[in-house]
Length: 364
Image 1 (cartoon, rainbow, N blue to C red):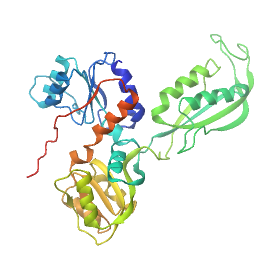
Image 2 (image 1 turned 135 degrees about the vertical axis):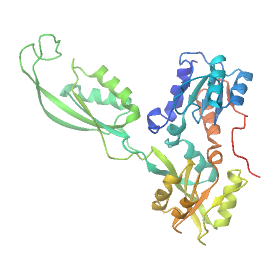
Image 3 (image 1 turned 90 degrees about the vertical axis):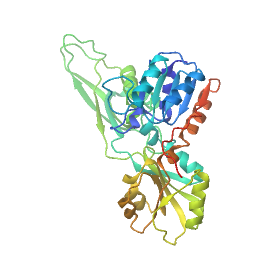
Image 4 (image 1 turned 60 degrees about the horizontal axis):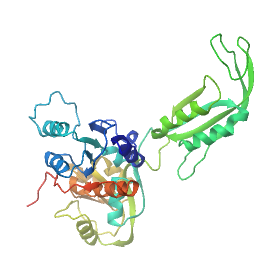
């Protein structure tokens, strides 16, 4: 396999279009056409991780966090970022990052936390905006059904748990082919009237390239008339955080102990206990203070995340508990998720779970 074939598989799980605008995801170091000798999966790409890849003969590192986040102006080895990039280039090792693309996936970071904690019926906590688009196109009536089928195959027409969704309107289209045209129907220099079908389909923005490719390939007209608009509707399966429920409600201290055991924690920072049962749990891997109000609005009994500042704990407003379990700790199972996913997709390929410790924070 080449690098691009592996990353294409990863983007089925977490399309790069899911990533936040501030992020830096995708292939950060290396050539997409390089043949892969082995894959090392890690949370962070540090020097010891590159050394591990070298020792295991892996020339592709799949990393959750991007080693290059902001622009590099020089490569002198003065910083840990520069040293990692230099060593990777010297040893012809590619580095691919997923970060917020995987955060926003319904089968990503937060889904894994829900699985570990045993939460049932998890749903997206903060659906991502501007992810649903609508295609409108016009086609001769006799060709409409065939085109719809091809657009469905390309990923259009999905609404929630429904697929093959579309809306059509019949009408009369008109056009006059110019001197340099080769019209499918009609004659040059004469206005042509055609019985046409107007097709409307919604789709997630991650599918746009494949949908437009199918449109241009299977539409009979030389010039395809189409419109694309971005909708205000939110996508039920793309977004930050998740909220789910325990099978059975439990006391607050009992849940904190469960949290400590399941997430392998040495310490939990949490807001005031309220003397209520814990049933509904919101989670968000990584820095999650921005989602506190969303967790309250979702009627969560507790919000599990990290990097909560002193004054942000007050935002619980005595309506729920905030539990800060540590940034690394919320994301620690992400690399297991990726190894499990890749092993199912390419079972006969060398995929290694990094043994390197990359958590920069220690507890005494």
